[in-house]
Length: 179
Image (cartoon, rainbow, N blue to C red):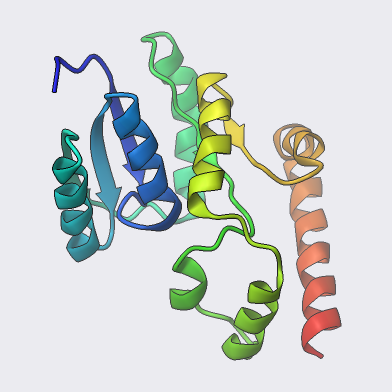
């Protein structure tokens, strides 16, 4: 591989959307740092990408919580002065292992999973293509859902309203589908 000029850090890069993003970075000849909680899958992904001619490494981290999103938003502006792009991906209805390994609180997980699988789910590769368009435009939040621009504005300018709307959507969906 020729000299690499850029580095991409992909949190959750060991599987699903993150792995698809790593493959997109590989096509762009970017050195990839796969940051994920799952060390076993992370090491497998490194081997797979290296087998495809990529240059990468794995780092075990846990950033799957609200403060991580806040950190990403903050880094977006802090890193900008150094030519570094930082984007937070907000996927929804993407067919990834998270649905199988996630927990359903106060709900029947089998029913929730059955309802999710009925939806037309995007592939991780399709989402990665959408995500890269947002990343290349240096968007702070990349969200493929309809009305995403409206929700981005609400999320940014009126976070408490955003929380209320999301709680209402979740509660209504839960009651309609699982009662």
